[in-house]
Image 1 (tube, rainbow, N blue to C red):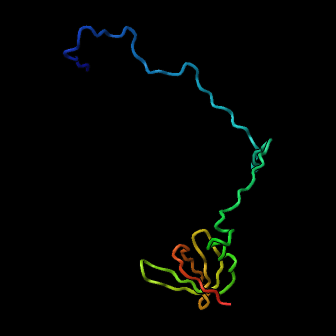
Image 2: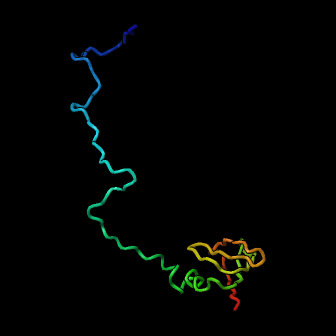
Length: 128
């Protein structure tokens, strides 16, 4: 059932050709994928030789806390952390690993690993 539209201005004309949706003139064909033997990666003809960028200087330079702590790996240490504005918490253990934002301590009593926030460290005591 068609509805008539009322109050259409008289200067608007009907299109002489019925409107159809736009379609591409040339059909798009899928591109063939190169076939590789199963389990074999594609071979790159001209591999680019990239240099590996050095890591952050914080880890390597002993002038930063992380760099200095890396020299202490394997030693028994006590670390004082500040929690909040004025509360100190200390943890002891063997320093196992130093990351960019954390350290890992192995607790002597339980042999458990504890991951600690590097940015809340205030003091480190190294037992010789």
